[in-house]
Image 1 (tube, one colour):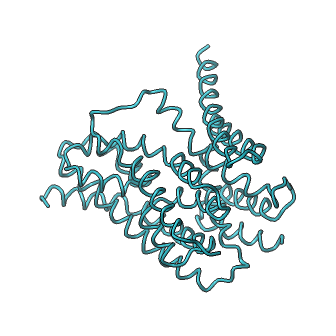
Image 2 (tube, chains in turn yellow, orange):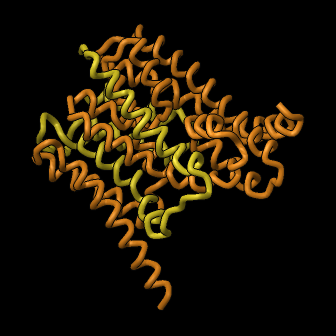
Image 3 (cartoon, chains in turn cyan, green):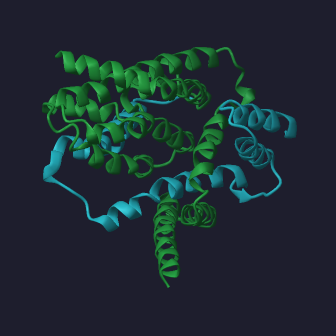
Length: 104
Length: 234
């Protein structure tokens, strides 16, 4: 696949607007600013909701249709199982990629 | 650099060394996944230096590959990074003594591992110079180790055939992040809601379904926490 200059625009926006700004926000603003308790509580659920919204379609959809029996889902289940059975940080990747290649 | 900055730096480096070693596999995987997504080595290292955030990088890769609209890519990255707003708020007081330029640097190098490891001590330590060293030295070390390890992954990926589908390592990485989060019931509900709705609403124009799914997931988690608290209270 080939990407044009807009890829660099994408990097800049992800890096500056979506990553450095949230990280630097209150460190730079200092103690002048604060967020309401309710907002802080709700924000805690954002990563889990977002990660699932990205990864679930990726492993259950094949060519845009739901397909429960597909190599990616098998590989994903293998990787999740590996995180439960061992603390080895490499194992989910080894199990997941091996399952993906074997099931294809 | 004052002696107390150096003393803080030494201590911060010591306590964060184990956490920093844990970054190496992540950085390698991120490097492999970026090349798997079709980036050149220069593009991959460009993303790594500009973004310096594994979750934002890995989370946006499938969207970039799928040709999703730019706004969706940026908003998705912003959502996975919202936790940093909370971390940043917690660090505001400990780092208040530093100049504005240094505080921007402290923001750029903010990572989950150093934050979690250093926060308690940062809250208690009275000397601002010591605190800055204690936070900044391990953060800069983690950034350096991250970039070097990513580069190793990027260069190694060049000798791997496309048919190995290395980009799938990004999906595995996201699952590895998600599983420990989902151990809490409300967090699990947020993830299940987000994942299910993202699949059901995939037909919405401009991939708006992903955004609706994320917002609904946050609402579901927040509501579940309320119910749990109320049940525990009665």
